[in-house]
Length: 403
Ligand code: 3PG
Ligand code: MG
Image (cartoon, rainbow, N blue to C red):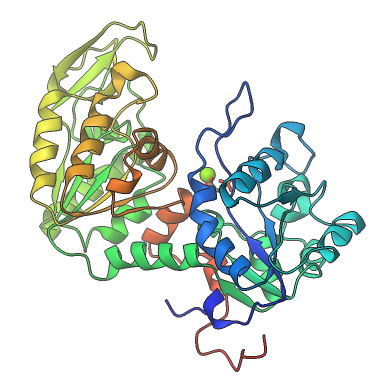
């Protein structure tokens, strides 16, 4: 990575604003954090700063409150969780900017940690408003961006602040770029991409970019229906992205021309409706009933995908194989997650729902790397520059020793 990191600057006694991605999933009913992986992932940077006597000012968004205060999306629960994990007090401020926040920051001692209130309570955050960026920047001496998961957003706390303070990457940001960059730059072959999830449209750019690097692409999940339809099969009530049919055909042709094996399901689990009570059955892909929809890959497909993956030395996985939230429709996703966990291959997991599945199954430690970025990892693997990375100082920047 050609960006400066937190290791390249002197943070001792400095006020360090750290953009983290603490956008953690919350239980709709109780508001409890259902997966704290993103908090754990930021710990190396936070501990690094505490150990060196920095005054640590953490900032994040949580959910999509659209520029208004939403009591359910306050950072209080996140601050509590972080405080438990760190074993030290983490104050949550009532706002991310303003006089009261400035007073809390001024009261920090070396090694203290504070968590600013949800950045997205201000619409100025997503608008990348320069005045809002200034308000944030004046809280600190140095800016550390550790929010890989939000690096695809050009928001004030990401690109705006980076223009106003010396801006370097955090340790998680560095690790994400190294691990995801590694599968693009020099993957050990054979290299397979296992793709699922609802839509192709989210993933076309990424698939096109990795087409020249992978040996095989395995497609399951909702998006398989669009590929099957593009291959002239009937898919019943399955969600098909009609406007993507040509793209799917095009990708299949590109794979053939490039010598990439593109595997689609041989059989699928179909159901009358998406509910735990629905009648369901396994059928070959050529026999999907007109009144049913695809909800998972079938047992034969699990076998053929497993066989392909067992021969690989690098596997990238993004997107569940079916509607895994309903346990009857989760078998394909669970079986392949277990296979990856046991595999000797380098296994790299795209973030978002795929990371949640792996974490729910307690398999995170069994994977080589689980990204904290959903959209961000897709954008990175599309070969596009992430605004949040672009905004950071380059390694060959003029002297930063005094920072
Ligand atoms: C994510 O969870 O993908 C990131 O935190 C970004 O959130 P957003 O999609 O609401 O911008
Ligand atoms: Mg998202």
